[in-house]
Image (spheres, rainbow over the protein chains, first blue to last red):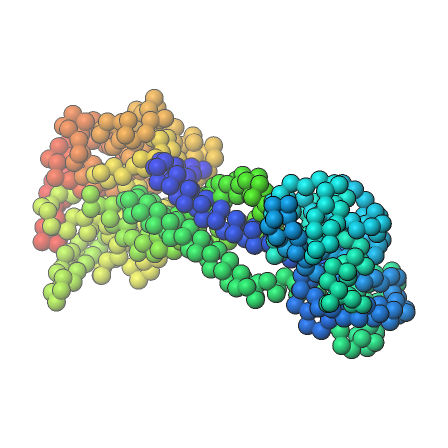
Length: 375
Length: 226
């Protein structure tokens, strides 16, 4: 079969290129916005995901993992005695001010645990051993801290809340949503850094269940024993932590608006290009009708053109997005474009480009085939 | 065998508050292998009649039969199937698809008629050979002369065995030599292929190839010569 749709489309290379570029940039805008958004959201819950705790105990209404409130550390004993609990530990997540060699001060979010190795946390240690953290006033820093702290190496010291700590290692990929660098220190040292708030206190209890234990049953029992605390499963806590940033910062709305505008720009470009092309080829569409082509077949030609432009535009947009990733990494920004997201954007691109064809469909449906006799 | 039979066909248009009667009871019949020329001054209703006979437009009254099947003007949505099955068109402006080659122009028309694959290719090669353009089948319309374009259009109309060919001023954009060649081709093919051919024209040269000449005057068709 002769593919008139594509031949017609490719006959005007300039217009075709402009259409594909328009769709491509709109797709890139959408993918980059969504990719950065989900990349940020991943940071919002990455420590929850990587800690592999089945349940999290926290102060009532703690909004997310970065903003826990203190409660008595002795509560962990009540949790450990519950049948089905394999292990439970106190975890401190708090903020400290770090004095830099330049004299400047930066904030850091630090995680304090008694036994990091038992929780396989942090998950990507590239230098040093977490087992050494309990041996003195030592700290592990994520390598992303170099962006704000400047270069550092194992053996260097930095002042955390006025206390001099020695850097004994570094991690990778440990970032919070707030973009504050992440540090890892011994639990008791964590309390010492902020004695007014954290003496005898913890901000979380992390719980690992026995394989046979029912999470809901154990959670309910913990809640019964600690009525003034909240207890969440890992999945719930990840969702709560992410939702906090989406709702409280207006980030969700901003991203939604930006993505919508990007999509709208793409639709307008395709609609305008297709309509101009349809108007220019009216005589040909009239001829097709005169030869016996039905309206749906003529509309099918236009739909094929829209979908082809959408396909190539999506490919270009995706290539632009993925090509930009190394640059974003250099800027310490995380782009999270999953196959599912890409597939959804692909489908949306096709649907929107087809929608953009509706004006052209109406034009050809109302076309009188007798136009072929009007010269 | 009668391919087209029109009886007492009427058609009027509304121009503002006025009703203009364009066709007032036109009757015409054309048989296979017959060439009929239709003459008439501008505004006489030739194009309207052609559109009705070609099932591009529904008549207000009268009867129209194509290959013995009644054409129902109350069902304009079915006219496309009659055009697809039974009618080939040749237009004054050629109306070829500029992005397709000569071969592809013919194959595309066959695709519309339901012909596919090798069957369509072979039929396209046959009709292009019949109009003497086998060596131009890979050329696009912009690379063909006016006469060659019209021959491609004729090949397209003939492809697929439609029994009725309607031609609107087929020599209108051609010089006299090209026009004469096209007319001879028309006549030969109409007879060899046993098609019914109606040519709407101002060109007196068409009379030389027509079996019958009719004129349309004041909305009616009158025979002139045969």
